[in-house]
Each structure stands twice: as structure tokens, then as C-alpha cells.
Image (cartoon, rainbow, N blue to C red; front, side):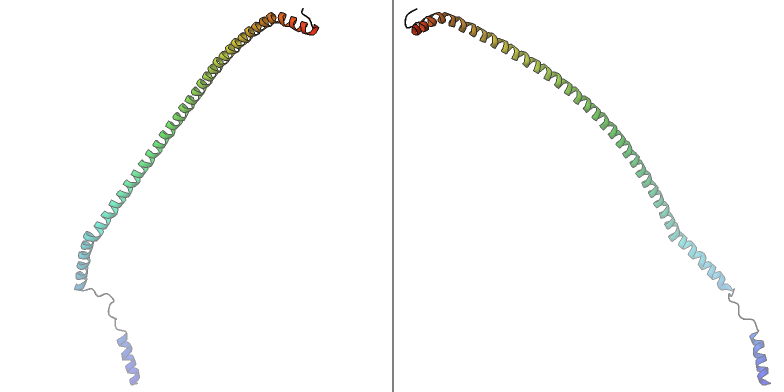
Amino acid sequence: MTLQVLLLAASEGAEEKAPPVIDIDGTVLLQFGIFLAMFFVLSEFLWKPYLKMRTERAHRIEGAEKTAAEAAARAEQLEREFKEKMGKARQSAEEERLRLSNEGRLRETELLASARDRAQSRVRATREQVNRQVEQAQAELLERADGLSRLLAGRLLGREV
């Protein structure tokens, strides 16, 4: 029985209320005050500078992106202008090349015609000179032919003709 009494007494004592997990007393106010103090200190010295730095960084990134986009647009515009100018320069160079080629052909034709004319005039002059010399030679031969034919006939016949 004594054991039963002891067990009964022990079970009644065990059924008594256990102490609460959170004890609300004056320390809660002290903990809340520490929390508020840390909140304001960390807010002022950690969160605000961090958020300010992130905002500034975002603005710098946006500015850099904007600057890069403007530079890319400017580069594209300059490239278009360059290609346009190069196209015009090529076209103008091609026109100039064609003009010079045509002028060269004209000049070549003129030079060839001039050279042909000079050559023909020299050929005519040479033919005239040759014809004159032939006529002179023929006249000389005709003059000499009579004497030579008599001399030849005399030698062939063995007597004077």
C-alpha cells in the first residue's frame, strides 16, 4: 500500500502544471527595447547605406546601359554613313574610271589615226621618191641603152655597129 500511496502522490504531483515555455515578465520589455534599438542602429548604419548603394548601382547600370545603347546607335549611324559615303565614292570612282577609259580610247584613236596619217604620208612620199628615182634610172638607162646596145652588138658581131 505504501507503494501505491507513493505512486498516487507522485502521479498527483506530476499532473501539476508545468512551467510555461515563454515567461512573460519585465524582461520582455527589455528585449523589445533591445530589438528596437538594434533595429534603428542596423537600419541607420546597415540597411539604409546598403539600399542607397544598390539604388546608386542600379542608376549607374541604367546609365551605362543607356550610354552603351546610344554608342551602339551612333556606331550604327556612323557605319551607315560610312557605307553610304563609300558607295558614293565607289560610284564616283567607277564613273571617273569609265570617263578616263573613254578619254584614253579617244586619245588612242586620235594617236593611231595621226600615226596612220603620218605613216601613209611617209609611204606616199617614199613611193613618189622611188617613182622619181625609177624614172630617173629609166631615163638614164634609156640614155645609156643606145650606147650599151651598140657596144654589145659590136662585140657580139665582132665589128662596130
